[in-house]
Length: 228
Image 1 (cartoon, rainbow, N blue to C red):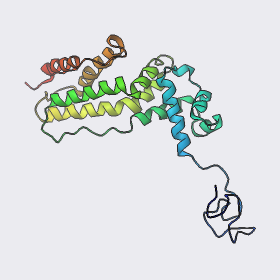
Image 2 (image 1 turned 90 degrees about the vertical axis):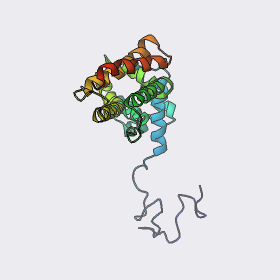
Image 3 (image 1 turned 30 degrees about the horizontal axis):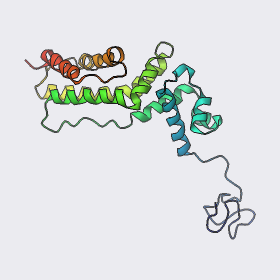
Image 4 (image 1 turned 135 degrees about the horizontal axis):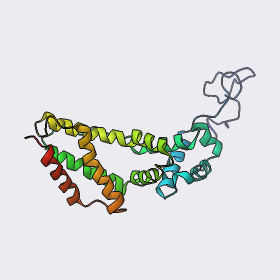
C-alpha cells in the first residue's frame, strides 16, 4: 500500500542512517523497524469467533484443538499460542465474549417482583435456546466430568453475572415487602433457575421451554416465598 506517495518500505524524506524525523515511520526513530508484530484485534476476534463457531456446531471440548481454531480463523497456530497458552484459557475467553453485556435489572419502575422474575426467566430461556451461548453451554456442560475446572471457570464468567441479576430482583422484592424478609436468597435463585435448565436439557432438548412452564414455576414458588 502506498501512503503519502511512498511504499511502506520506502524511506521518508530526511530519513538518513541513524533515524527518521517522521514518528510514523515504520522503521522507527532509530532507523530500524520496531521488533515484534502489532497486536491484531481483528485476529483475536477471528480466533474467538472460531472457537464459538466450532463448539456451537457440536465439536466436543475434548476434541477441539488449537490447530482447528487456527484453521477456522485463518491464522497460523503460532498466532493463537501467542495470545493464549492453552485451550482452556482460549475457550474461557471465548465464552466471556458472549456474556459481556450484563446490565443490572431495572428496579426503578413500578413492576411487581413476579413480572421481573418472569422477564428474567423468559430472557434466560431465549438466550439458552436461540443464542450461540446456549449451544456453547451445552458443549461445555457435556465436558463437566472430565474437565471440572473448565466448567468452574465457565460458571464464574458466564453464569455468575446472571445469578447476580436474579439476586438483585429477589432482594428488591424483600425490601419492597413482596417477599418474605427471611428468604434464603441463594436457595431461592437455585429454585428458580434449576428447573428451567433441567427442563431445557432433559424434557425439551433443542426446544424452547413453554411459557406456561415458567409462569407456573414462578407462581408456585411465590406462594411459599411471598410475604405473609
